[in-house]
Length: 421
Image (cartoon, rainbow, N blue to C red):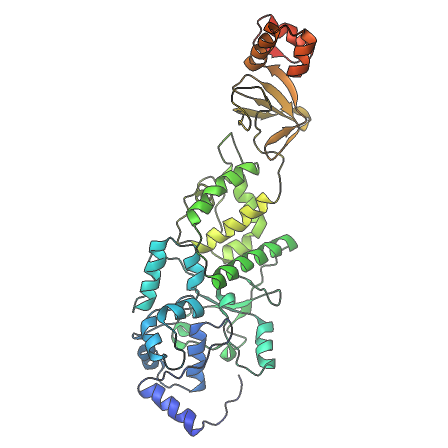
């Protein structure tokens, strides 16, 4: 802990004012600093004797440490008007994690959360927040080198963020569930080495990249004041998972296999540490998210699923359920076949309601590749008879349909379903 200089008369006066009534002369926040960090620095610098009374005067009620959000902001805005000139909503936007949560909340919950933060209310029940103090050792060193106090950064406090984007290293943390921290409001520079520990989850390079993508997404939501329609986003997840090959049938998802790959993508220690480890099965929270039923209050989980689904869109698994390659069928293009099975030689067999059957090696965006017809259906027989009535020869018909003259002959004899030659 750094040595304290003797108090000047001005500092002593500010301290007396803070202890006895209320001091609104808070320091300007540093870039990305949290409101609780500014207040904690002020109390330490002025050696506020009665922190409980000071915090009650500032927030309007007995305020405990709130890492992610803050409440009673109308009182804070009123008491700091002459130094900051920020409204309660501006305090929420600029000095708390409100923008991160609000970005993924429906308008009613978003507005309700903002109202709660203005008044003397605690955490609104519909919102799931995680209060963990995290920091970067390199950022602390940067602060010391710049001659400024070490301070808590909002981007490090975001749930699910385990690394510093500026320095590319894992953060250190201490849980604010510890009672003395809820009361004491610690500054970063007052923490001893015994109070915190580095996050040691040992990711592989791919998992570290996934963590970094989550961190970038979370920081982007925090700083860009966006509003995302989570319902519309969740509605796309099922199609994305299906197109990536996680399927039991034309529309049924294999959520058990999807869950295993989701855990491999981030690593079980990371998901457990962030409170988002799904159980293996077809009815866990991940299955609910993919099927569009994740409650909007689970902000971190929505981000994790979105990043994972984005990774699925970046690659074609080659095993997506196929569309029917019969171009002359009445159902038209992009019709999904009703049955698919895996056969010998690493190939698949497909069967469509139009009567067309075929084998194929893989799919590209759902289109079967290396198709080998095994059975022709009604559409081929009807087109062959139609062409015959116009006077076309067997060879002409074969060229149009794309089959051999022998197959055409069998189709014209009344066989609606003819095996491919």
